[in-house]
Image 1 (cartoon, rainbow, N blue to C red):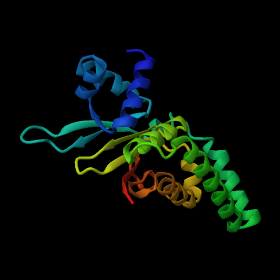
Image 2 (image 1 turned 135 degrees about the vertical axis):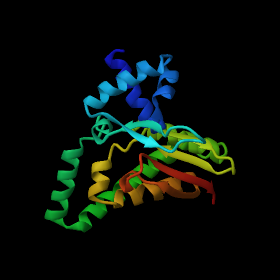
Image 3 (image 1 turned 180 degrees about the vertical axis):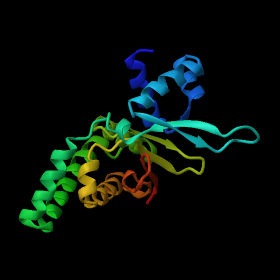
Length: 207
């Protein structure tokens, strides 16, 4: 397998979460042993690691492969170190109020732009789909679908502003409010990258 195959495996794990070697092989039309060999090479580079999952029924526990911190760093980070340093300096020099002002201004600008792009046409499901497309274009690797109970699910498999959000949780609060405003719906965050989840996930229901 070539390096491009390793990149494809990274993308699969980023989007779909921990996977069996057999599932990875099936996704790319190769044997599970070939997938396992590539995963072992990637593990040597510190990009992935195997964890033991719960076995279904009888049999041995399953070995699931997932991204390490180094693996996650292969995806765009929005100039993480520079962003974090600038925000820290902003607070030190001008106080936390200045950062709040920046976050509020960003929220207003983002809401205006999203409202224009999403529009008011179509049902809530279609608007959530358009929001997911916008977020994907911005680097969040987003997706959306309708759950069995009728709720709409929006997920973001990557956070290109994670460094900024780590310095100030206000960015995450602001994005949640932006989603509620542009969708005109109830939006609740159920998974959060900053709290250790592999992705951010939101449940969307009519207001």
